Image (cartoon, rainbow, N blue to C red; front, side, top):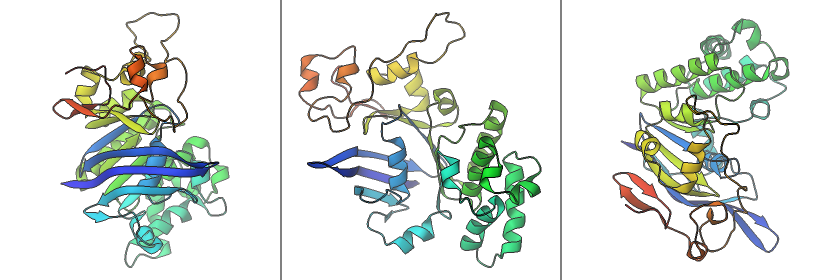
Length: 319
């Protein structure tokens, strides 16, 4: 069952002489019980897309297109409707935990707040007791003491786990995880991923997993979208994408991965950087692409299905 459907989503902000589109008409869907991986360099629009799905794009930003959750259009909903959804049905693990946590509330109180707001009949005492259990579940030692601490009293890794505990507290139907394993060692990272996947198996939760770590995404995602400069340049089932990447940008990302069987003095890199997101006509990757020709700068390629479920936006990719 399709839980989330995004069609023609654009996010823009004002700038001198007009507006800058940082997300430019992207479309994708996500079924209940499935995990969608979202990859790409910093500045490609991954986190802004996530904020749009949560109704949290800061003013004066504007969101256009369609975001349908369980068949219900979310764009244009009043603030009260968004508040009823956030935390209960749609939850997010934010990329920077220090700014996601309230500095003047204890960590346990903040986790309990979500439970008290969204679970009928739950009081603060019961909510704070559950908060302790959630902190323990995400691998925090002495969870009772940590629940009484303020965010600045926790390490970066502990704050990250506290944000994850908060997002999972109400067992949301859709979890948007923006770099959830940042600042975590590999052991805790594995524990957190297992916790998410166990909850997915038990409740049918859908996960949108945003990460720079292609190895992690390859392990947990059913489908992957590759974003570049506010656009989706490739979308495919996870196994298909890593077995047969087609877009030059995707090939470049995968080539940068360390390979124990390959001895090199320096890992490959993609030259240049993500361009201004309002590039005008032409392929946005053209200036960095080894296959680019003059014609690539004349029109922007549309995504074409090159194999079942495998869409690529590139003029130089053949079936």
